[in-house]
Image: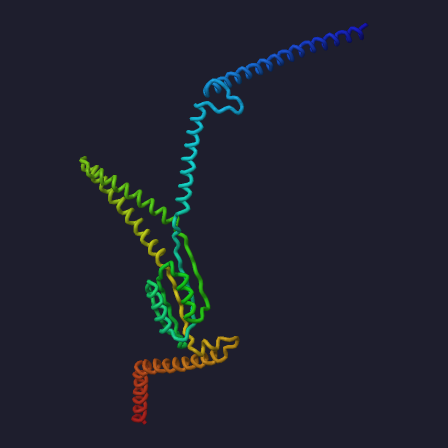
Length: 323
């Protein structure tokens, strides 16, 4: 009996729990149904509002749109065309920016006549519309002569002149370099325009009447703006000069006709002549050293030797008198 009672009690508890769960499920289902019905109602209202805004009726498939819709579509197309045109003009303006390039070059030439080559380089630069900005020549201890010529030539003729310079001798080294300063150029133009506008505004303020302290303060600001404008304009002038005229530095080594002809694998004759010139230089320096040693020696050691000779002579004379 006890076992049956326990079983009956467990079954009663189970049934009670099932009834509670069924109630919860029913409530949940009701909530879901309520939310779905609310969504449908809102969707219907939105659809009605949308149709009313465009004439109150939904156009049938294939039918022409209402006049209001046609006008709004045309307006939208016009706005889109304006935006596209603005985008195209902006892109074109960006693409039409002139590139500002600073071109420079260096080369080393071996020539037979240093002076003639330097004169030819200067003439080439002047004929092209440029000029020689630096020129120097020197001779080393072994008698070899070298030089350097710096020329400024129009940038549009840089490649042509750089190639012609290589024909003046044997080009053993050359290099070209290009620096794009377009971004700095555009930035400087914008900053100069802004500073000028600031200066004009300050000058307008300066013309007004006011307290002396205010006038002095505005005047200081005018001087500051003017100084910044001049500084920016100075940088712009430098960039314009470097962009319009390219710089080429030519280093020249004179080897003579024989030296240039014997630039083969062995170059025995060239080194024999170089060694002979070196020997001559050594002998020359020995002669110079002897001269510099003798002249100071006579002036410095001569009196000391005479003094020693006079002291020894006096001592010998005394010894003879005593004997």
